[in-house]
Length: 290
Image (cartoon, rainbow, N blue to C red; front, top):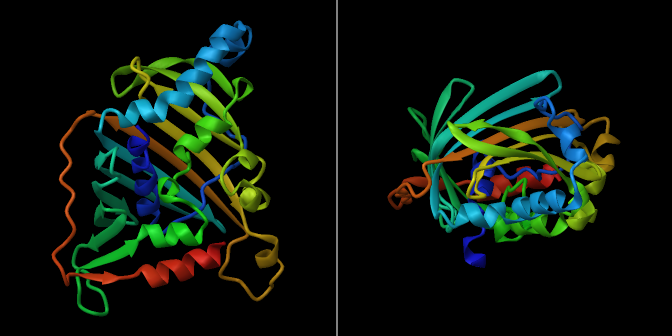
């Protein structure tokens, strides 16, 4: 069902970064393939390639059909010689997008919840200027400013849109390996950014293609997704010498892993009055990045 498309991992990515960043194409760096992987796949017949394409296209819906899962996210952001790593772990509702996670970044532990596409975060021992322990950001409003619909919030895979953009020539079977103790098939995927919603708008900044790697289990569900990208500053920004705060280039590596499908998810918003609304600041920051 369309309502079960996987907007979940998407929202989690935006949450880990603390704001919405347009995820798109990057450099051509790729994980090392197993011996006999990609080169052997290239020699297989068209039927094999079509089967791989069909499997990748269906993966997000197959995963969402599980309704929920445990998710681990590892992310690295690098700009101007500095690298920030963040790790997140928790549970996620694959149908609704709600999630409960704990995120560790720069030595800080962040409690995070996404409820009805609103992000809530709390850093232990810290309070906002208003004295509230939680901050909240309406991800729908931030996504709307970025020209994305509800199923594209922070999503580097843009779910169904990617499935439509993938053709047989875009998918290569690399091999098989264990992911979390489960047998998984590894595919290398290259997507034409221009075929995605808003592709013309971000092509100049993110490049022509999106290289990503996915690992699917025997039921066709997503077990791991890896994206390594380089986001370039827009020409209008890089041309301004006084805009020293804006990095010319941002490298981002994201790995998501899913397990324990069907696990219970109890995502609830913090008590009323305990969260400071930071949506306005997120909108300003997001507009600056654009």
